[in-house]
Image 1 (cartoon, rainbow, N blue to C red):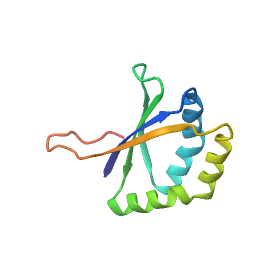
Image 2 (image 1 turned 90 degrees about the vertical axis):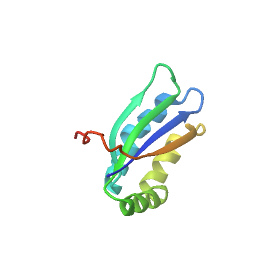
Image 3 (image 1 turned 135 degrees about the vertical axis):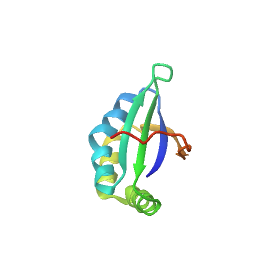
Image 4 (image 1 turned 30 degrees about the vertical axis):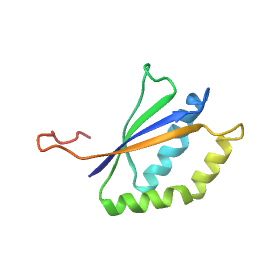
Length: 108
């Protein structure tokens, strides 16, 4: 399994709308494309940030899903509908994760 830890930083005042879009629109699209959302977080320390961990069954599946997502018509429509007052996302970062030799197996 290939894992990535992602951080989204919302534009000012947009964190609730960003999280709502992710929950209601992005997650079902991800699931359809084979992007497995493992866990999602918010933080009182960073109130304008949203964090999540995704997994892909293989490097090939990751490449295919990440190529398909921005071109997906359902995603394009959801993004456009949610951004009538401007962008929700100010920045994003991705960290590719590699397990250590002593890591326990992920729990599902």
